[in-house]
Image (tube, rainbow, N blue to C red; front, side, top):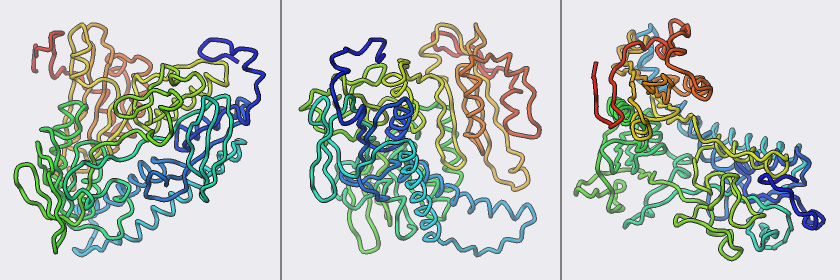
Length: 492
């Protein structure tokens, strides 16, 4: 078998194992790796913790974070939240919407739960139909080729495998402040029994701005506290400012350069103390302060698998750990923590180990989206990254306009689009959009960037009219040119 371009040792090939591959963790990456490995003829086993919408060290579920307590249920709630503002806009389109419109949170919550239960069943069937053997329980590694599964009744069973794959994902981090037990994470936020009327969100990343948008759209008063001047650190600064403006425009109270120092139980809610001495009152406090790799219960140190200071499993370009027979994919490696990336890593692991085709994951031109309202979506380099990495001048093209829908509804919220271009080669290095349908549009733009499209090719493409997407192929005028030194050269 070809692994990393090397033939496996004949003596090793003759050893007998219970499985060719045993996977710990049946989330997106683990399920994909299992199924694809099985399709190459491997005998595969996989273990996962028992199902529940709210996770813990001993609770999980086949489908993983994305399906059960992440992307999917979050987007269902996001869809629900968009109807509030849409109903307001509908009046301008002739719809006689009465002032009092009731929203049934529990009905939506049940629909969400029904859907994740359905998807959990689909993932189980996908594994079964692929010939993968499933085990419910907690897995840990006890040797280079040995896995121990603790079943629900406490019984421990060992299995041997030629290869072991770690795909245990990550878990939400709770800040260590007095009263932290009064706060919740995104797990609980997706399963609240009652819709809160007052919410404080701590954090400035994806999860923070998404939940702020969801609760705001459902009528709650939302306070968003974050440590930097703008939310969404790491994104293009210009687009971060657009998102902040939109959140504020929709009624979310922004608290930049603010942290929480204490939560106190009060008669009428939770008293929230900021590091500026400000007091806020909330029904719910959401900690959206990052996630940590799920690795501490895997017994990795004992078997020689190296992890970094955050607990992320260290891997090489092919997802192999410091122990040759043990591999890792997905959030537990803390490379690029996105579901489609975990799917890519799982696919390429199977190709490398069982397909005879060593394949490195490619992290260039990975598109991603923040499902705030309206959403932000990007692919490629931000303006700041392009300036930092580039050797030549950078051309920036931007367009800010009122979407056609808003011209009738009167909503004062602009769509903003941006292209970052290498001045010498005319290659499009990055694209960003904040506005309705941004993720749907950006997926197509990602294909163009993956193929190395130039600005001339964008310009020569005929647009679809009337649409927002056509703006990406009609931006003719340079907004600004930035010298290789990072100094602004022109601002047209």
